[in-house]
Image 1 (tube, rainbow, N blue to C red):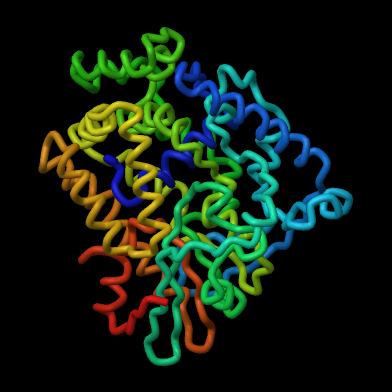
Image 2: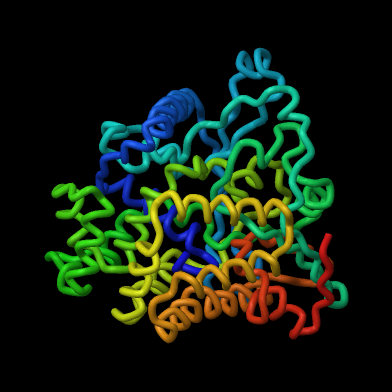
Length: 410
């Protein structure tokens, strides 16, 4: 797990972005044929739903002058057709970002498009009555209070399973109550930040020539080639990526076995609710990408080494472990597990520490600074950021405590 606290968010963002532009293409590993077939079905369903639905856009304005770069999201809503609701009373309204509607318009062959067989933006699956009425998981959820200023903090997972959000009770009552009470909702990125993401990824993560073989040792490049099955077409495209992006692209293979879908990420499910507050981002897409692109070449090599240190099956198992700890709702335990796992995978201690500092801890401080700018007395703020950003001595919760907030787990 070389990307630390946000490894899942950034990788899914980049793969989603790549699928909307000059996409990198991959052949699915033989072991993932079941997931590939399921992805074809769900993606087809998503495309059908998107073409049959209408979108409504509500513009918003910046809530505070103190926020330096928190772009406001425009919520785009698609409604489950009435006939379908009658046949499936457990179906809920599905909110989608403009991005998902754009990407659903046209898809390359599922055999060659990574986003299709990984199931990105797959349509919601109908749940049985038992599943719809299941008890929602705990999730890491906290209240931070300083005087009359209240900030609710939810640890997010940016992809998940349908069972994580039962249709009738998608979140615990405490979380739903906080969402209804919030004057503003903040994610890591505004949903609208994804709309034109492909161009930014292309500019930041790609080279005009085959730069990857010249940026990493030959032995490491051979590992990359082996991981993608010596596919010359894939290698040709990977050769034009910087090492940090190559690490994320290679990890896409390992995601297949987990079966996670971005429609069942926490942010997407929060948008399913009728929110009183506007949605803003705590950082811009450029800021998020810059955190990776400005890593030293040594640190980028370390990322790639850690990505290839385990088999795809082992990496998928780690992802499921993160998911289990997230459902249990303890941010500090999740941080401790991640720290121990990184210690096992690291090849260069100094380079690994520099990755954590730049990708996790510096961004934690940026998140806290933006939270400070957005919060105000008698105007509750609801924050949903990657769960691995919350725990530990340099996590967002610790930063809030050090600033005088009384933090308690709900």
